[in-house]
Length: 135
Image: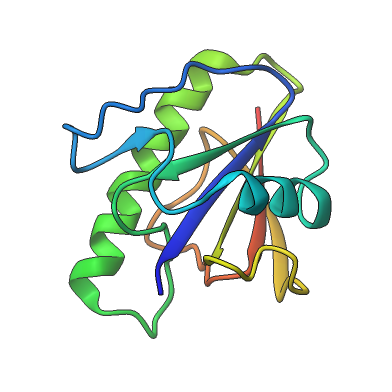
């Protein structure tokens, strides 16, 4: 099984399906069209949904392997930098990570963060947690 991370937003963003960047890109990796439809229907409030691909999803929790958690923190910072260029003041984007095939499952938590004002070492984002990043 694979951990996939999805983002939902109110605007279209540029998809970069060039998987030559092993660290991070926006485009398909694990998910298929049905997975994207399920996460849109059951988790997000936004019209546009994308997979955030990095050959493993973004999950930040105390129960993770420290190296994988550190990589997730770097990916989340990069994602926020990218999305900061897309969304305008008073807008938001949503993030959700789950095992592929579990997009329609009940979410286990949700939280809201400011896109430019959070301490990456103080946040907890386990799988099946909806995170709303506001600007």
